[in-house]
Length: 346
Image 1 (spheres, rainbow, N blue to C red):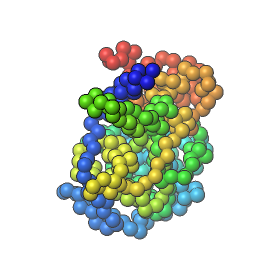
Image 2: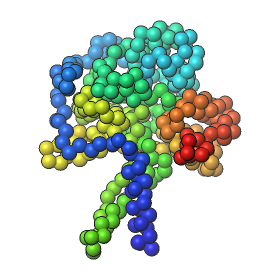
Image 3: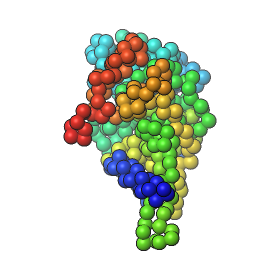
Image 4: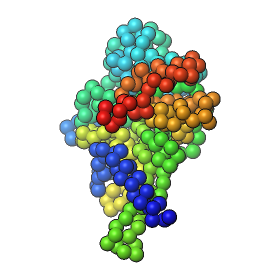
């Protein structure tokens, strides 16, 4: 009945809250600065209004229809000979899928030498460190927004991809391009990815105890497409400014700046949003929880798969390759749905 349905919805809301540790919602944020110098705490970023000439020259050779697929990486993700590692698998996936317009933002000199050997296009750029200065996945990920801004300033729409992603089809054949941002979702089914009506119960209100709200799982900041325009440039500026001031998870900040509405003195970023198709642009929870088991996906090949939900990233990437590229139908069988077979007691 309706009461049981609402109880289930409230339970789902509690689960939703549990899945978002560390997300901080701010009541007030500084307005996005314009072009020129932006001072954020102790670090000042001098923002270019004309674009980086070196990057411009690279993009004129690499981009197709003013679009480019980009990953940010250091040399830790590929062997010194360039033959092994997550970045090598990322490159192999792009090449096999026929993506001509892909490149790497190399954030150390060692990587440039490897990419030269592999004849892979790159832009060597040292990002300004954010408040999270660790050379961890999160620390490096937080720097990417200031780098992607430079592509947008030059008028190139950009598909940003983390390195723990396998490309199985050309993603540019599967984008809609009707909104400012197209993003992978952390949702694992249509409801969690595209949103649902949730009901909050406040018994002391009596007749009006049920308050409806809209929920959707977070956008994944490891895979998103940005159309080059003033709104997306402003979005990159806002995210970078906050990450310079706050030791915050970049994905949480990305979501807040995309989703959060204007209120009081806060003015929203103004970008429009599309969620990518969850069975084409796939997170690893969707793959290992659902798609590998259901017959309807037996012959379905995703466009891109992001191993974001699991710590054994490289091993799972190799097995995903074995399954979809080499045709090994049992390649995914050995893995638990989560990070261990006894979850949550891992």
